[in-house]
Image (cartoon, rainbow, N blue to C red):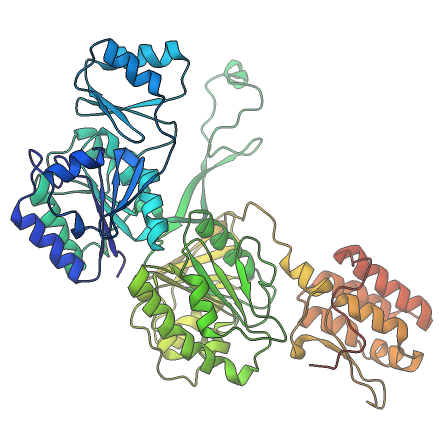
Length: 610
């Protein structure tokens, strides 16, 4: 289910001539019994609304005064969401004979043509206020206060997300309100400009239109409604085409200095048309696959940054501790502590908190059981509150390996959307692979990666449509070909792998162990910092044993995925250097790339090996 909140305007949306008919009330009661939250968002003053609407308790919360007031009809509590209007403004308007004139707790209201008096009074009194119109009504409010801000305040009170809201309205003051919701609908009697801007135009007017919307929600028909404005940018396809010759030499100097036209490349014989490629924010089951070090985390980071930046709540299950320092999210768990499922669910009850579940402290064999306990709790939370919105599974084959026959998830939409990251698609449970609707391949051989996924799913591998510039390939469900494209990178360059490898804590099976020629030692280097520290303390025989066997470069290449550093260290391993010189040379190479901390951060020589 995509939505669990319906937010309605009152006049000429829910009500006609200030009254709500019985059929509309009955429709809202059915929606409430189905578990939906109901919000009323109106420009009316609260007392005025209650005088004409006898069913306020039907709504979980009421936003009145065009976003200035929040009323709980069950508790009968009222909170202002902004400062009250200056008394001198209302006094002046009364003195000028402005009528009607309503003065609420936050709002001052009248009607056209008295907006002339209102604007003049605001200017002459030197006040910072805004004027909002709605079908002849004139509302004066503090700057930044509108129906959208009121909606967000109500959602915060209920621990709900705007990405789970359908909003419906009819007038000018509903623009921000409808845009803030995941889906904005307009009743048939709405202003043309609002219809043009909304996601869904209803066939019926006022209350009958709201009842129509209720029927669509109860039937689940809105879940599959395509909402392009919420699609998530993935990358760009560059299409080359022959350039057209300029008509004359004189025209080559036209245009501003340094200005480039979209799709043109300077100094070349070809021009490139650039097309954006976006993914739906709901209902997608996305697989990101490719060899180690090929860029899977780069793709994930770019998508994650854009999702969290737009307010989607993401849950990242992180078996290897790769996201332990991801900015802007709550990290639960560490090498010594596995987060309890109850703890995870408690944090996720607040939609503003995206969460990383760090499972590095959990044995590989125990990870599928942990995930099997977690998944139903996440789907239950979404059914109750409408979030989380995305479940991201790094090293997904650790959580749903091929041996797992059943996954308690029928559709990615049961969790909003699903992102699976793996090196080997065929190592994933067939039940998990059935949830995949689109696949992204990274690395030098994307066709091979997509073929491996297709084989695991029992599908025909897609043809690969090449592009002049590309670093990933996208295969959409139902298409017989995959497209190469260029990833739109994250705005902030990720350094999590560098931090993790330099001073974090790597998993046991990825750490380096100094054992020596007779394997009398077992000194674990959890990161590059401890590796350098331990290398300075081990005896020459132990250091040279691993050096001559190429163990250092092999570890860096296979576990860190840093081929460039591995090649540099391999050169040291092949050179005829003394133990002291080779130690120093390897330490210098590591320090140059990873900027090792001046003081130890994780290493405790008295701590037992985990």
